[in-house]
Length: 167
Image 1 (tube, rainbow, N blue to C red):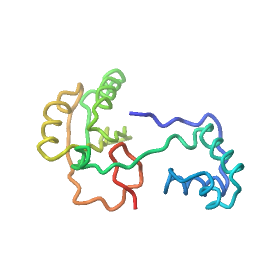
Image 2 (tube, one colour):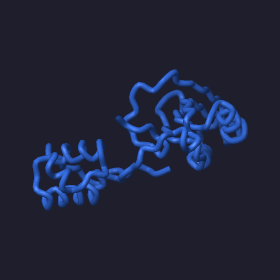
Image 3 (spheres, rainbow, N blue to C red):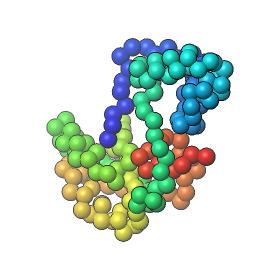
């Protein structure tokens, strides 16, 4: 799982940069000419701005939205986890093993309870049950695991490896 880089300095993003970012979030495959036209620039300054946004770590990547069912990830579950041992060594070991699982699409360490919130994606309920039994429940330091099955996703804006296509 990739880590979101932390800024080493204060980032300066103006309204044109925000327009570029907004356009790229909607369609990162558009040409520089199309992007420049959409944000009211000529192609050369537009490309310079995109390169600067990439170099400064504001744009951290470009993604393809894949239909989850096409890659056996159509069944999503929100999972809350509490650890029984919250020592630094135990927590780090738990995190390292957790993020190695392909089924874990997103993992967040929380302040307070629960200790972790996950988004897990599998092919179906049977695959999720096997994932829990054979992988999650074997993690070191696991105290409590609770699964929440969404009725439907109303909004999903974050690009994910197996994310839903954005409209």
